[in-house]
Length: 627
Image (tube, rainbow, N blue to C red; front, side, top):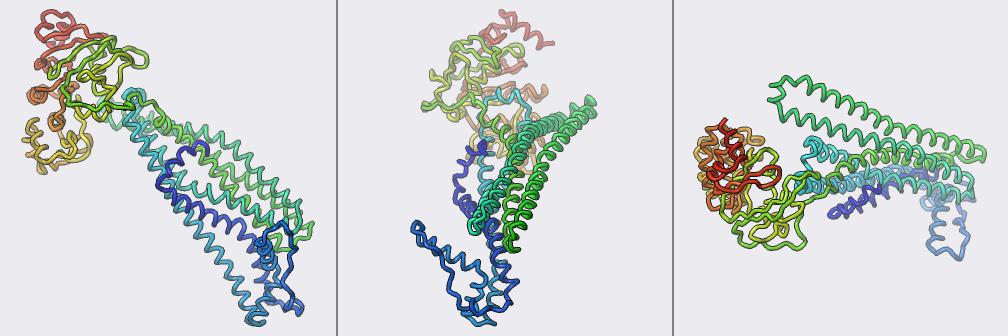
């Protein structure tokens, strides 16, 4: 359990339920481990011997005496007297007869003895129910906190974290591995309370029986046999964890294949790759099935071993009890106590197997939870003043996994200037723009906004003053109005419509049967590419931030849609410090200035006309556009 201890701090908010579950589990364990054997020894003899004639000397027999020890508290003496009295069936029978007469007394004794059976069952059953309910509620509370932490951590991790991982595997970790933990918390947590206490109370009864009858040899046999159960549990648990880790990893790989296939259905069919993808998925499922069978083999091979050890111990107890002339009721009570020792041990073996399997899931989740965030809020953030929009890069170096993407870049961009970033693929344009909203931090050097290092601002405050219009407009499930409203949470309906008018999106929206209440579908599937981009631009108008980044905002559109949207983008950029990342040079003619990138450096800086006349790389890129 030591890997899971840190997560018990997440019980805050459910500690009362957890404490109640623990108490109920202890009541269940007491009724099972001690109550059932004690009832067999005390109650059953009364029931099956209640009609026997009462000897005269027993009717008036004095209460059993207990030797008084000076070191024992008075309440201990009183408890010993009561226990001795209860276990002496002749004394109990005589007490009932003396109080109510022979006929009524024996009838009441029989009724009382029989009533003890459902009473113990009621206490045991209801305590077990409350234990399961309250510990499950506590476990689900912890699971909710873990899932929330993982989800929030994914949103804080640097973009580089995702570039080296498949989305399907990450989805599998958040959903499937969380479900594995949920199964652990809902089906195992209550056993972690009930079974150990049941085992302890059952051992307690064996100790009690041995002390009362001054029989230490039998107790020693019982105590030695119980630890033998631990050996197969530990040996099998190690093998189980290794295979469970491989099983969860294989499940993540299969989820990744499925995600890739569903995300590229047109391309797969266009290149006749259906059979290839099916074969890859089938191979993954076969590997997963093989590993799953191995997990089942190790998980369910523990109970037979425990049952064998338990049966051997009962056989030894049977032989020893016969040789020592045990009475039937004592022997049955001892066997019941032994069963209450070995049955919890068997269930704890199952719990151990599940814990080992869940450790593999927890390791995969901790791969997210313990990942370096890279970009974080400063301990003492600077309050963001009224932003003018002046950007400065001061000898900025940035590396991806040790490979340089920007090499000593220094440039000043005045507030309100529209700057285009051009260059070959991989030249550093996107990296340059990504440093502004702090998707990454420079490896060395600094980026400033109005002469203040970006790392001194809270991420939320900084990004509130920056708008990004990406190449592919990302719309979330919901209506058109809700998606535009993401630019400014809490915006009024009139503000949203005004933003749509500025983006020239209002006419096509009003042509929809439901207008602004039209659902956009998953990732905006119900709208055309141009319509999605206009909604993205409307969102940017609504946000009205002083810094704007257009990341190839028209690259995914056809020529006609691009031409129509260029005017809206030009209007959006007016009065804002704007970075335009573009491969199509038709989209950068509105720029006041062009920066030419090559191999992580700025190799050209000027107006479109100046660079077209004098810069070789820019002219080459421009010529390629014409062809």
